[in-house]
Length: 65
Image (cartoon, rainbow, N blue to C red):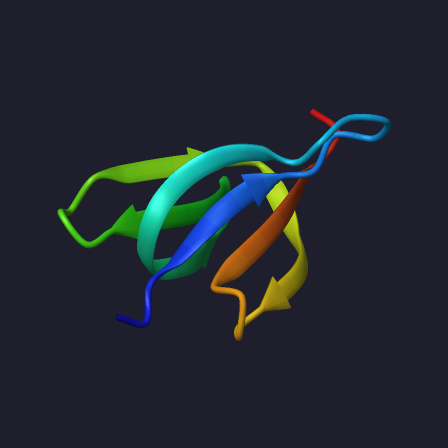
């Protein structure tokens, strides 16, 4: 499968799982829309810090409010 897991990077801590089996990442005015293979959606005000495609990881970092 080609899905990736999205993690939230928190300085000084281990990356925290945000959403598993992400199929789509869509930039929006209010943040990033992530959708998994089952259609579950989450929106987060964050930027993409890293895409580790071989490892199937999306690393996000929250943006200031």
